[in-house]
Length: 45
Image (tube, rainbow, N blue to C red; front, side, top):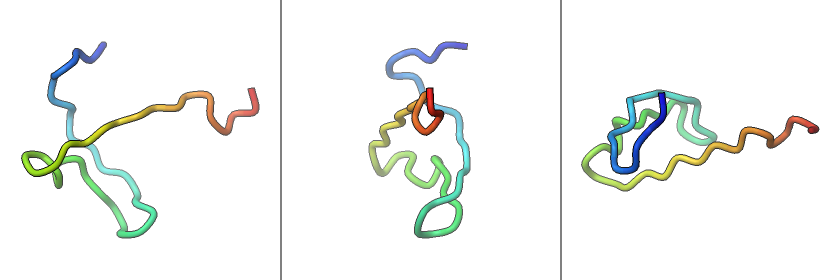
Protein backbone atom coordinates (compact mmCIF):
# COMPACT_ATOMS: atom_id res chain seq x y z
CA UNK A 1 0.00 0.00 0.00
CA UNK A 2 1.49 3.34 -1.03
CA UNK A 3 1.29 6.35 1.26
CA UNK A 4 -0.09 9.59 -0.08
CA UNK A 5 1.30 13.03 0.67
CA UNK A 6 -0.52 14.48 3.67
CA UNK A 7 -1.92 11.17 4.91
CA UNK A 8 -1.65 10.21 8.58
CA UNK A 9 1.02 7.60 9.29
CA UNK A 10 0.02 4.56 11.35
CA UNK A 11 1.33 4.47 14.89
CA UNK A 12 4.47 2.42 15.53
CA UNK A 13 6.97 1.93 18.34
CA UNK A 14 10.72 1.45 17.96
CA UNK A 15 13.83 1.53 20.15
CA UNK A 16 15.37 4.93 20.81
CA UNK A 17 19.09 5.58 21.08
CA UNK A 18 18.53 7.53 24.31
CA UNK A 19 15.16 6.97 26.00
CA UNK A 20 14.05 3.32 25.66
CA UNK A 21 11.12 2.88 23.27
CA UNK A 22 9.55 5.75 21.37
CA UNK A 23 6.17 5.85 19.61
CA UNK A 24 4.99 8.05 16.78
CA UNK A 25 1.81 8.75 18.75
CA UNK A 26 3.90 10.58 21.39
CA UNK A 27 4.34 13.43 18.89
CA UNK A 28 0.93 13.44 17.18
CA UNK A 29 -0.62 16.89 17.43
CA UNK A 30 2.42 18.53 19.01
CA UNK A 31 5.38 18.13 16.62
CA UNK A 32 6.09 17.60 12.94
CA UNK A 33 7.78 14.26 12.28
CA UNK A 34 9.76 13.35 9.15
CA UNK A 35 10.17 9.65 8.38
CA UNK A 36 13.10 8.74 6.18
CA UNK A 37 13.82 5.20 4.98
CA UNK A 38 17.28 4.30 3.69
CA UNK A 39 16.74 0.82 2.32
CA UNK A 40 20.25 0.11 1.05
CA UNK A 41 22.24 1.63 3.95
CA UNK A 42 24.52 -0.82 5.74
CA UNK A 43 23.75 -3.68 3.32
CA UNK A 44 27.06 -3.80 1.51
CA UNK A 45 25.36 -3.61 -1.88
